[in-house]
Every structure is written in C-alpha cells, then in structure tokens.
Image (cartoon, rainbow, N blue to C red; front, top):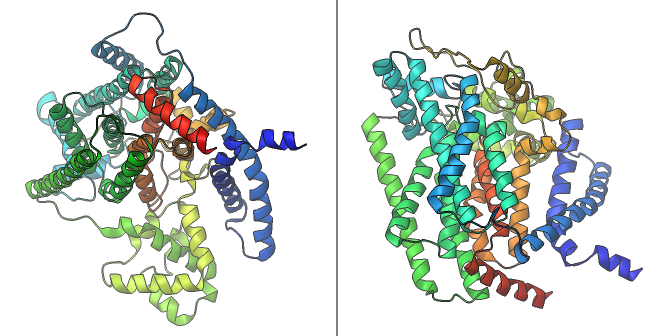
Length: 572
C-alpha cells in the first residue's frame, strides 16, 4: 500500500500540487459564476466549493505531474533536432520558414481582401482624416495605419488598395518575425517535431492567419513582444553574437514594444525588480563561467535606463509632432466602475438613500441597469461621469466596497473570467455572434468610414471566407472536442504557469527571465475592460516558443541543464 501511495505522490506530484490547485480553483469559480452568476454567499456554499476544489486538485495535479515528467524527458534526454543530416545556414532556415508561413496566409488574405478592417480602425483613421490625434490609441500605430490609408487615397487611387498594401506589409513583417523565431529554435537545437508543430500553428491556426491581415494594434505589438522574449532569452544565455548589433536590436525592439501598447510600459517597469532578482538567484545557484555577474547586471541596468529614456523621448516626440491630446483615464477605471455598477444592479434596494445619491453623480440609475454587462465594461465606462470629481469617485468606490465586498469580487472575476477559466465562452460572444455581423471569437466586420473613404470588401476566395467565418464568427470551433481548448485565452496563461513551475523547481532561473514581462503584462489585462483573444495574442505567439525551448540541446545550455539537474536531484 505504501509503495502505491509513493508511486502517486512522488516529487513530480509534489511539484504539481500548487498549479493543480490554482487550475482547480479557477475551474470551480468559473463554473459557479456561470451557473449562479455569483460565487458563494454562505458557509455551506463555501464548504461545498472547498470540497470540489480539493477533489479536482487531485485530478489536475496528476495531469500536471505527467506533463512535468514529459518536459523533464525533453530537457534531459536526447531528442531528434534535425530532419536530415545536412546543416543549414541561419538565413536559409529563416527564408524557408518565413516563405512557408507567408504562402499559407496568402489565401486568407485573398479571402478577406483588402483587409480585416475591424476593431479600432475607424476611430484611429478618423484622427488621421481630421488631423486631430489622441493618445487613447498608440500614436505610432495610428500613424502606421494612416500612412497606408493615405497611400491608397493619394497614390494608388483607392483607400481599399492602401489597406491591401497594409495587409501585405503586416503579413510579411509577422511572417518574418515567426520565421526568425523558428530560425532561433533551429539554432538552439530544439526538437524538430516541436518546431514542425509550431510552424503548423503559426501558418494554419486561424487566429494567426486572420490577425495577420487585421488592422488592430495588437498584431504588431505581439510580434514585438515575441522578439523581446527571444532577445531576453539570448541575453540571459549569453548568446548575443555581435554585442553592439545585439544592443541596438534589443533597445529598438524594447522601445517599439512599449510604444505600440499604452499599458506595456507599466508591465515593463514592474517586471524590472523581478528580472534582477531572478538573475541574482541564478548567480547564487549556478556557477557563472566566464562571466562577471556584476558587470552583466550593470549592463542590464544601463539597457533598462536607455530603453526607458528612449521611450520617453520617442513618446514625447510623437505627441509633439501630432499635437495629440491625452486620452481619457477611463480605461484604468474599468474594474472599479464595473464593481460599482454591479452593486447597484444587484443591491439597489439595500443601498441607503445617501449612497444612492452619491452613486448617481457617477453612474446614474437612469441608465446603469440597462447598460451593465458583467463581461464588458465599455457600456458603463463610456457613460460614467469621472472628470467632475475623481477623488470623490474613488472614495465612493471604497465605501461601497466595504459594504458589498463579495459583489466587488464577483464583478472582478466576471469581467476577467476568460483570462483564467479554460471553459469560458463569454470572450467569443462579447460583441455578438454570426457571419452576418462579423462578430464572434474574432471581429471580421468591416468598419464604416465617411463617404468617399470607404474600405470596400472584395473576396477573391469566397468559399474560404465562408469556412473561416464559421470558425471565428459562428464559433464553430467550440464543437471540436479537446482541440477547441487552444482557442481559449486562458489556455496560454496556464501553459505559461506550467513553464514557470517547471523551471523554477529545477532552479534554472535564467529560463524564467524571458517570461517575467509576460506575467506582469497579464496582470494589467486583469484590469482591462473585457477579455478578447487579441489582448492575449502576445501569449498566443510567445508561450509555445518558450515551451519549445524546453527541448533545446545547444552545448552551453546542456551544460547548465546538467548542473541544475544534479542540484535538483541532490535536494530531492
């Protein structure tokens, strides 16, 4: 009997319990919110949830244990890294992967010609037409989008042609980023099977092919995040080649990444202490051969300061050049406004008259009951009065929260549910569902522009477009058993957590350095107005790459891996 228990409860199971518990908790909370529109309100309900979480933790921990054992074999055992005997130059590998991905995307481009003109495109281009810019959207992307729009109107004879050129350029840029990533994986001697799966994922997965021709800022931002993660990996491993060239590339990518997403700078700044802490822990746990740790950290500090300085200068320069005015702080108040609105909707009769009067100053009872959507803050956020007395708003939010804390918790959980609940479907129905509307898992609708500036759709492969629309607008992917989980935004978060647990337990802290920014960026998403796959797209393109690097067999990596493996075995 003891032997059987030991077989189940080994070091892998012990390492998997924490993550297994979190996944189980998220599953129970997500299911309860879906069924009851709330979590628990009594001791008996709380007790039932605890039992459900404990039972589910046993199952999830066992599954994670199997995954950790598989990752250990990938890390410590020999894997096939090449298809044949011949070794190819990096540029050959890069061109091959880039070409394959671009060719697979071409039919999708023809099906959606000239582009997927959706999301915030019309709002950004109205700024271009009126020459009246706002920092609500990243200025660099508004100008990037506007350049192709004007190219079409002023040179090519139609705005649609300009957006077609935009699609081709963005497709090429993203294909090159993915091609470069796969080239790095080839050079790091990762599993050739995993590289093939990743190539197929980049080339065929509908999220990648459709977003490659979409006008949303999240596409190029995600590509830059992927490059940043790769460069962080190379820096942490000392694989930098020409130091000056590497430094220029690293700084350029970092600054552009911060410019392409307004909330990226917060994640970047908050991640810095953790990056240097992990570097220090790595120096303590593993001998750093041929490296002066202090000098490496000093170079890192200089790189960070240079990045932030260049970001501030470029950001100020763009704002000065366009005479842009500051965007509204409403985005940052998405969760507090949702919490206040939910409390009014669910507890209006329990709120005293004085508090209701206070609330009417910010979220009026005239519209809040019809506007509140537990999964989307925009209806409340856009109507709330926040500029007259922002300090009073915060005070009212705090006072109301002390009276209804569980409602506040439920509001936060509902608003962010797609980021952590694997079975969530609300993220695919936020704006509607159906081919006719172009809303669903992805937005493929064609936004309305002023007369004479319209973007006219003309599908050259209507059959393919119908097929793709069934997947991303009619949400037919949800009918595919098991495989449908790769469409879930939360899937990529939990994969990242698995990666972190694996390398943390092995004390390979350098392998954690590239993903610190992703973790901090995830925390900013929890405070966003809703859950959309485009918000999680940086994780979609980056996390599979880091998992693939688990199998890296490059000589310097193998040596470090062996040292860490011996250390882990000694401790266990």
